[in-house]
Amino acid sequence: MPRSLTNYQIKLLAAVFMVIDHIGAVLLPDVAELRIIGRLSFPLFCWLLVQGEAHTRNVYRYGRRLLLWGIISQPIYQLTFELAWWEDLNILFTLLIGLVCLRSARAFPELEPPIWLAGGLVAEAIHANYGIYGIALIALIAHFKPDQLWWAVWIVLHLLTLIAWGDQIVAAASPIFFWLANYQPGAKARWFYLFYPGHLLVLFGIKFYLLPGVLGAIALLS
Image (cartoon, rainbow, N blue to C red; front, side, top):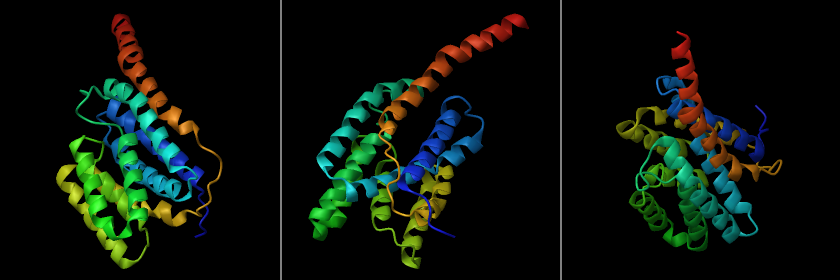
């Protein structure tokens, strides 16, 4: 099978899976299949982060962009998922911690294990989405090598997620997309930083304004 997916195409796939996941979480919580499909999203964003860190010309600007849009997105994220501010920070904060770990591990390779451990503990402490699992995912993807050892560690990590949330096991299949990647950037995709809070805002509007109005109209007609 030819390796034909550019990073842009992988970003499109990640965005589609994310929207499917969030539709399931916000609008159709009884349709479990949507959340299951959506589990493929986050590993693809981790892949893109690893590729972005390796090729960015300005890692500080990259980090500032993640931080800025993470802050902008957080109130919308909280409203859409009906969360208190301390409960869960959106994935842009998780990716920012991962970026710091990636660049720190590159600068100090002899300290790589404690760097990733510290990143995971920080993610847990500030309640970043996916927590230590998310940071472990980024660490493994940074060392992606589809041999038996890598796959064994990857599968064990996802078997452990069965303890916390069962449907995350589906993410174990995401390296199929890594293997299909051709490591070419493809088209520019700066749109994602606006798309992330934008799609959450749309879901918020549908859930709290459009859907109640439609249901109310149906009730009146009936």
